[in-house]
Structure formats: structure tokens, C-alpha cells
Length: 285
Length: 269
Image: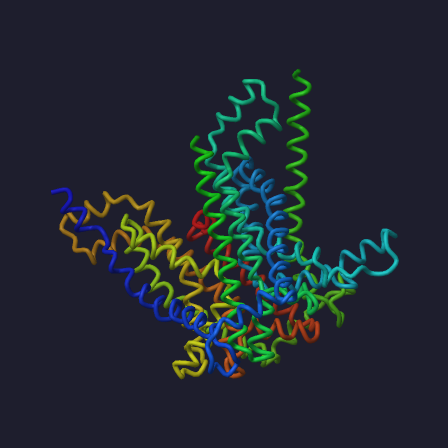
């Protein structure tokens, strides 16, 4: 009797079919086509071969672009974690009214247009921007520093753009911790730092990894922020794809860069997911 | 002993407090700067502005290129949001309570556009449509945007569905309500906030999308974020600050409304 009732009200997996079909046609097929195009040896797409991949993997310049992209992603993620964790911690200990204010501050950048946020950084980091004016009026420097087209400027801009994606999972993780654990730790004589490092941090590991996954993957692919703040001299993977696809019209090479980039991002996702499983083990054990 | 413990607590709170404040400044500063600069009376993006005026907002009234791009972005965002809601809510209903492997594979598939490089998908979609012989248009833009927007709807709808008590559906069914009636009168009102939050996120991310639009738009289908990006790359036009001001203020108002109606911040966690 009971199974029949549940059967009556449960929704059928078939309801997912329209979206699955949509994804098959407009997402999976184009990506397969992308791989197919990348396996052509010439821009006219007449001969097959792994030439494009060999070209990328044997070219120091291309490898440098890939390496720098991955490195800047890692630096951004580290900065997001360093600043985002304390904010999530502050949120978890705040009274209700402050939480509503904080959550709006955290969400607003997530929803503000990326171009707008990046534009703000141009104003802040520019030659006549806030940072330079402040440093000059303090007498620390004589001539404006070049901040706009630098790695440091880019990392800060990317960190601001992706901070919400780090903070939100951390808030969830921190709010799940039983407050009695910290009390117990203190009662047993552990200092605040020790409790923080040995209880709070390990218990939020899954949230940390989830946040790192999102910030890392999205900073790798943040084309607009990268091109506007990084400038022309600092080419990263998304810009490289765009340049090869539009300026040189070399579709097979652009497709090959895209495939390599997709593989790099998928590898990162897999690594983070494995770490996440390990972290769950840590939390349970 | 006690003094040492206090020192530890104070230094920990101080360290985390300072870092959290730095984070708040980092989050707020850019938005504040944009809004202040957009009211400048000068011709440059100098900060702080030499004086304040509404001249650049007034200038938007006859910036027909920006208006045209904004209208296109709006049309595409509405289309992509509607399609995302229809397909995404159905898919969420299908996979939310299923424990089958197919359901979890589909779930990962539907979420993957959030993580994968949008630019790679944009190029793939352009190649795909050109092979099909479909010229790029608002229609192809809607399709491309739907792929990257639908994950938001699926995610928030599944989140509210998982909080839905199945007993409610069972009692509705045992009282003789048809499935469609139960869906309309029980399920839909209870998951409405999730759908609204998802639709809002989908709309915002479509309106703001660049990587996919980059490849799928043409001169006839100019999109606002791309127009803004190109103007920023060529000349630092102060009108872009005014557009940004309009976007930021609109977003703030929408955010507060959706937060009140649907508890957006709870859906995102």
C-alpha cells in the first residue's frame, strides 16, 4: 500500500529528459565537434592529425600561458581563502541583523556585472587611481606605480570578483559545527588558537575545498577581468583562445587550446573532488 | 594560565577580525567607487571626482548604441530565463528524489557549465551552429545562454525540493487530488521561492554573460556587456561609469526584493 502511494506522488526521472536532450544537442555535441576540429592539421581543415596538440605542447610560449593561468588561479584562490575564511567566521558569530547586512555585502559583487566590477578596478588601480593618489599624498612614492597591468593587481581584482563563491560554502560549513566542540576543547585546556587550528579548521575542510574549487575554476576562466586588468602583455588561456579564434582565424589551433584548457580545468575539478572525499573522511574520523 | 588563554583568544579574534574587515573593504570598495565616479562632473575617471553632476546619466539618453545593446541583452536574458525555468524545473523534479545513478550523472552534467570555461563552450557553439548552417542571431544566443544559465535554476529548485516533506504530497494524493492538481496546489507554492531565486540568478548571469555572447553575437545583435567591454578597451568613456551606476543600483533593488521574497542567500548555500 505504502509503496503504491509513494509511487503515485514521486516525480518521474523522465521529467529530466527534455533538458537532457537539450544538453545532448547544444552542449555535448558542440564539445565533441570542438574536439573533432582540434584534430585537424591545417586551418582549412582538410588533413587530420595531432599537429595542433604537438604544436601547443612543444611551444614554450603556449606552455608559459598555461602555466601562468594555473598559477594566477592558485594565487587568487589563496587570497580568497585568507580573507574569505575570517569573513565567514565573522558571519557565523554575528547577531541576526548584522548577518542580513553582511550577506547583502557578500552577494552584491556576485550579482554585479563583471564588466562593472572590473571597471571599478581600472579606476582604483589606474595611474590616477585611488591607490596611486594615496601613496603619492603619503609621500611614499614620487611617480605613479604601474598597478593596472600587473599580476598583483589582477590577483586582487580576481579575488574580489570571486570572493562570494568562497565565502558562501564556508558559511555553510562553519554554521554546521557544533558549538559544544569548541567549549569542550576550551574546557580541556586548549587555547583559542589551538582550538581554531585543531577543531574549527579541520571541521570546515569540506567547505574550504568546495570554495577553493569554485574560485579556482572561475578565476582560470575569467576572460574579462583577465584582459582588462591583465592587459595585452599578460596573455592567459581564455584570451589565447579568443586571440587564435578571431584574430588569426585558426580554428583547429583555437579548438586545441580549448580542449587542453578544458582538460586542465577538469583535472583541477577531479583533484578537488578527491580532496573533498578525503576531507569528509577526516570530518567523520 | 588564565592570562595566557585570554591572550590567545584576543589575538585570534583580532587577527580574524582584521582579515575579515579587509575582506569587507575589498568587497565594498569597487562598488562604491563605481557609483561615485558615475556622478562625476569631470571628463575623466579620476577618483575622487572633482565635482558631482548627473551629466553622464543624461548622456545615456541619446547613447543609442548602448541602448540598442541593452535591449538585446534584455531580450536574450528574458528568453534564456524562461527556457531555463521550463527545462530546469522539470529536470529538477525528475532528479531531485531519484537515487538512481542516471539521476546523479544528469545532475553533474547539468551543473558542469558552471565550472567549465565559458569561452571554450562559446567557440564550440559557434562551430556547431556554423556547421548546421544557422546564422548567429538572438535565437542562437538564447540557446547558448540557456546552457550556462540553467544550472542556477536546477540547483535552487533541487535545494527547495529536498526540503519538501513527501508526506504533504502523499496526503494530497490520498485525499484524491490528481498529480497535476497536487503539483499546482502543493508542490509549486512550496518550491516557488527556489524557482524564483534560480530564475533571478539565471537572468542576471545571462544579462552579464560575455564568454558565450562573444562568439554568438554579431553587429546586429550587439550585447551590453560586450559593448561596455569594447568601449573600456578602446577609450575609458565616463558614460560606461553611468551605465555601471544604473546596473549596480538596479541589481541592488532586485537583490533586496528577491532576498525578501525568496530568501536568496539561503538558497545559495
